[in-house]
Image (cartoon, rainbow, N blue to C red; front, side, top):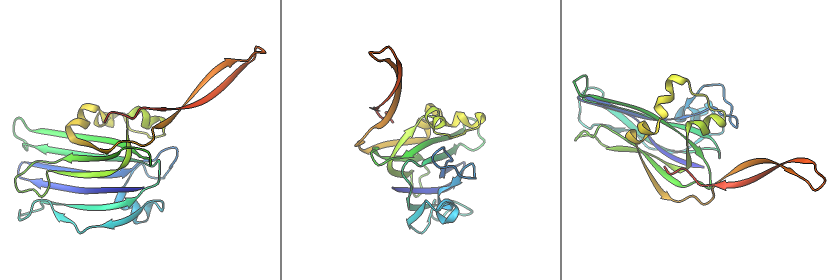
Length: 213
């Protein structure tokens, strides 16, 4: 499945921003590392992920002295049902009173029937910056932390605040380009009694509505 990302960092006077995508270990895709940068994974760390195309890096703030940062846009082939983390941080105001620091993450699941989404990391908004947002685009579901835990993802408790909906909405802009074509099947188990009086466990699948993100 194709996923296009623009990742990197930006440094401006009094502010900075970063955005990266990581692979996440899960029940379906156990990997030795806790998480791996997607670009690194595609270079050989994970043979199931491949780089389809990669553009030359773009300076984050053209003409600015020092290390203004850079952005790299690439397209990857990622397996169905693979879980990824989009990570973003933004600092504005430097160390001055009223400065703001946002640190947020979201977990996505690659799925052919999912909505085609664009997740934009909101940057510093500096007048000379190349981008105001950088995007991750593909067909994926956005998972809650509870849903990710159920799929085998482990997030240390002191990092869980990054995944709070309030932080996600402050850090990202989420756009649905095309609606999902198939919802996620959910297994339901119940016990029924046969005409002979025997208790039998029955498992059925239903499709549920996608997250409103």
